[in-house]
Image 1 (cartoon, helix red, strand yellow):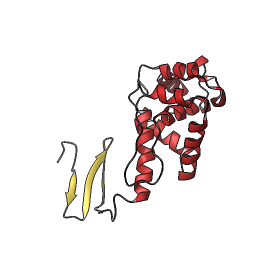
Image 2: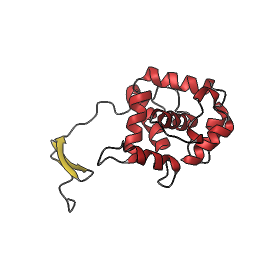
Image 3: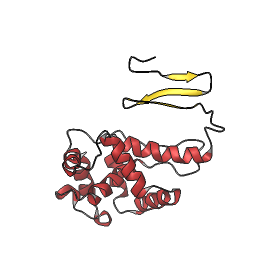
Image 4: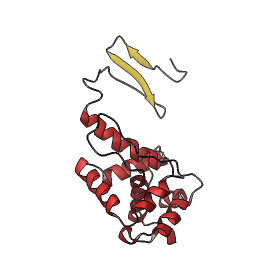
Length: 177
């Protein structure tokens, strides 16, 4: 038991837990197949997006512009907002994920996107039980760029169109993270 409430299972019937300071109770469930292909596909997407969005530094220009937009709901973290935004707008289906991945790998600046992800510590992400292609390390930062453009970020690092991106453009954007 935590000092702020109950936590854990009770008689394999219910689970007491808390999230962001809110206590809740739910039914105890054992997944029938926690490593199904569908689970793997979703985890590849969520894992890749989460790892990329986690690289947005509190001290970076991207974070500053995001805060100025005032789009993050009260009680939600910057990272959870970005993960939800990216998935809702670009990766809500496996077909959209595959399309974004194909656009990335076909882009003139593909190598630059991959190179830009490396110093951030982002690597490709895959699971053995997933059927989708691995989450490419450059995809997450490219989707963060699309997010910056969609939210109307201003400044030289946010103005190039995706199709015209050069290595220098990618480097300038990565520096804002």
